[in-house]
Amino acid sequence: MSKSVPVRTIFALMALIPLVGCSTARTDIVSSNTMPEYSGESVVVMARSYHTGNRTESDFTRCVVNTLRRSSSGINIMPSEQFVDAMYPWFEPRTAPPTIGAVPKLLNNDKIAQRMRDTGVRYVVWLDGNTEKPTGGGSMSCAAGPGGAGCFGFAWWESDSDYDAAVWDLEGSKEAGNIETRVSGTSYLPAIVVPIPLIARTRSTACRDLASQVQSFIMSEELGSS
Amino acid sequence: MARKIRQLGILGGLSVIALTAGCSTTVTLPSTELPDALVDRYPLSVAVRYDEALADYTYSEQLATGERISIGIGQASQAMFSKTFSDMFDRVVIVPSGERPPDEIDLLVEPSIFALEFALPSQTVTNDYAVWIKYRLKIYDASGQEQADYAVSAYGKAARESLMAGTKSALTSASELALRDAAVLLLTRFEKEANLLGRQLPDVSLVDVPPEIDASTPLPPVGEAESTTTAEQPNSEQYL
Image 1 (cartoon, each protein chain N blue to C red):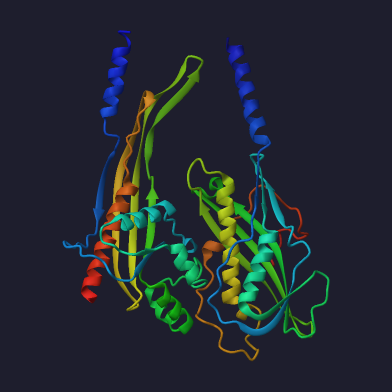
Image 2 (image 1 turned 60 degrees about the vertical axis):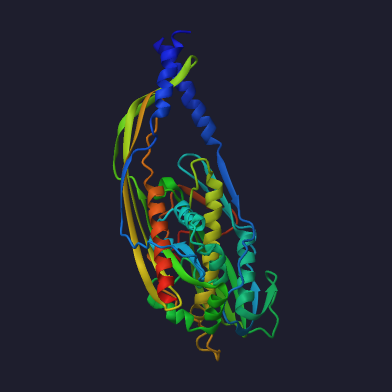
């Protein structure tokens, strides 16, 4: 019985360790101190086409969309699938306008321009970039037997989350702005019997930063045009 | 003791081989739901005659690991062609294989699947699954003269959503995207590829479509491949 006390204490101390690695974030800021209620048209958030080699993760796009939806600004986010289906086949990975300069030509067609108006979408946010793990090291070995299982060792890796968002204003057929964010961090995985992951959540930090800046940007654009 | 450990190691190794040797993944694509296309219809009456092997087309490949992956896209491809052509032309008639099309048609289109390839994360060195489908379209005019014979090279890519998600769901998503890409290529390039430009048509071309992008170039095939229903194998340069 007395032997179990130190084990329990060790586990309790482990639980107190904040399970995060260290990370640094840099975002090119477009700030807005006041956040009025948004009453403008819809916004669509999409990843750039994989046909151009873009590798933005789908869960990153989902994260940005959900963060914008949860924000208090009231920005109306249209699901990208719904927008792409409505504009089919002109916003597909192969056919989506590569630059804002190609949009006026697309909207020259009355049918497409009318459909675009029907969707109520004014801003398209194109996400680009991804998270990479450039370096890592350490070693860990795990073993299991009839008496139990455990791991011993230490591993670490770096994560670089590098994303940018291009905001297109379809009403004026102009690129309203470009927001970039870069978050780097190092994760650690020490293991003495039980592995304790200390994860640097660079992607979720980048998501929060980018969503916050996109929100501020669109709000300031709306204020400017109203 | 050392002998026992060696025996256990051999037993474990054999177990792993036995477990993985029999593995197979079969993806049968359901009819993909495509939205109504935002294009003007060509004022043409078109007959579509499907290649006999199209509906049952299944591509099967044995990987170096012993795993067999099969992708069935025949039914879904046929549904995609029917939906897309009905979006593109005023009138579409489906003609059973081997039968003559009606006399009053302007064009006869014969689609077939020329090749399919896929890549797994172990080959792409990413978290992505990719599928390439190469269709072949033969187009005849009303007099039965061949007007065009061209390939549609479609590409789809999907990431594995999580470590627990299987190969099947990601390959299905990638195949669906490739099928949709093929439909987009038909909608946006058919006029040029099928030599319709010489015909007296209204201005149906909506916008200039970006040129072919290198990302859709297939990777070299890995492992032994066999196609269960097509006579042609992806070894010809003509349509690759």
